[in-house]
Amino acid sequence: MNIPTTIPFVDLNLQHLPIKNQLQQAIQKVLEQGDFVLGKTLSDFEAAFAVASGTKYGIGVACGTDAIALGLQACNIGAGDEVILPANTFVATLIGVLRTGAKPILVDCDRHTGLIDLEAAAKAITSKTKAIIPVHLYGQMVSPKKLLDLADTYKILIFEDAAQAHLAEREGYRAGSVGIAAAFSFYPSKNLGAFGDGGILLTRDQQVAEKMVRLRNYGASRKYFHTEIGTNSRLDTIQAAVLHQKLPYLQNWNRDRLNIAKNYDAELAPLTTKGIIPIQNQSGEGHVYHLYVIRVCESCAVERCVIQEQLTSLGIQTGIHYPIPCHLQPGFANLGYQIGDFPQAEMLANQILSLPMYPGLSNNQVQKITDAIAQILTVNSFDKNLLFT
Ligand SMILES: *Cc1c(COP(=O)(O)O)cnc(C)c1O
Image (tube, rainbow, N blue to C red):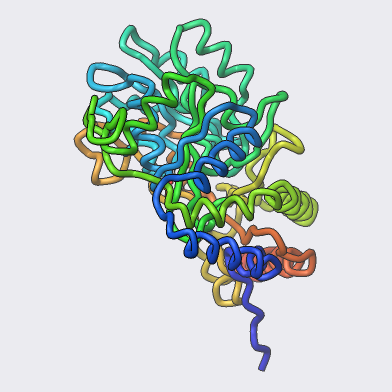
């Protein structure tokens, strides 16, 4: 019998094993220094990541969700304000807004890219709108030029959710350098991942940076002197040490992801006529492919769940990012949204499938995955035809 090769959805060992000694030494150094919270190892990494992202200040926090929630607060966004964000995002974006007391205003997305629909966003702007949160979804930035135009026209802030877009570029901008501030996550499977949870807020604005430094540290402007209600949310020194070791490799890892995506695109091109369409890359070489997502369109003879199940049975792991759009999550029912409010986001939730994507995924593996999809389409469509003959 043929034992199926297992291709995982993500394989972090491929990143970590080649630099294992380096990572161990960095961790060892933190242990020896006995300095585990805040301190120079953290501030060195914060500065390095800010510079790499084309901006000035970095403030490490416990996770990406905190970077959004505290970061919005650091931009003085709160009760009475409206914040525009896409319905097609991970719930953390929405949770971040809700934690500030501001009112989230969801808008639909573009069906080709899954990114926020900026025309819909413009229509949603009111006198209370304080900010828009573009989510650089799947590793592709929302057009900086269009964002800056919009923000300039309506005098609103841009707060980037760059949790999936470390070092992504578009139109000459890097993710994190477009708006007043940007939130990143270092969840292990993100393009730059810690050995646990972590996040950072980037900003070029000194006041935002200073407020963020207070907010993550109990609202203290100096020791035991508290000027606001902050919280305890710091990026652990050990995580900062690990992340700083990994940072120099990030660009190559991202390039690897881009090459894998190009490979997928080429291999999947013949399946377009069968209803398999990759999410569009409109930013060329600047896409950092946190995820490689295809659509199983209505015209496809085989349902997404069948394709996913059969890939699983062939040992190929896939994901759906995300199966239920934010506005239809039961936890947010009190926001008053309904099925039909954001047709593109709802359509995508039903069609999308994320294929394995990580630095080190080989051409051979991509071939196996795309061959498997082609085979699943052929076999299942054939069965369907047989029924009618
Ligand atoms: C991962 C992610 C977050 C949240 O980051 P955590 O570190 O898990 O809190 C926020 N927004 C998006 C788009 C994400 O992908």
